[in-house]
Image (cartoon, rainbow, N blue to C red; front, side):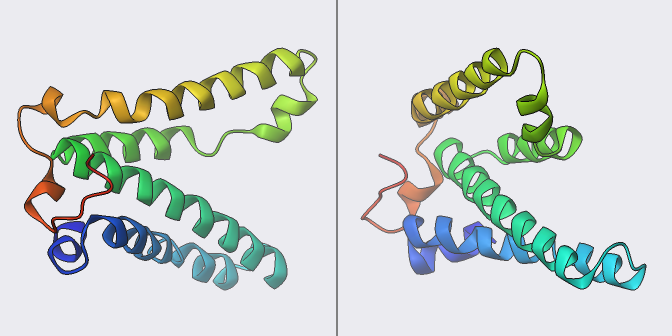
Length: 143
């Protein structure tokens, strides 16, 4: 969907709009849970809202990777890894006897992720101009 939105909306709006569709695409879990009565209606919809939130953020991340690298393999591998690992068990980490060390590791991981995301997705590493360079002239994601 991103390559379709990119020429029409430009990179910024496309990166923000595409993940919303990605998040909505995961709403089929709500229908399954309601159909098989896997919890109360309120808890199912609360779970769906949480899942929509993190899938939308993840969708923005994979859209960013696709735009920066110009390759589909990065987002596909990220999605596969995310599906196999699931959402981090923050509650279990906070109950762990060494929770301070685990919390420090989580924070270090988030900090390194944010610090290295832009440099490690440099289009020069991938041998060509980023996908968004082919779209609108005002490029916020690529630079």
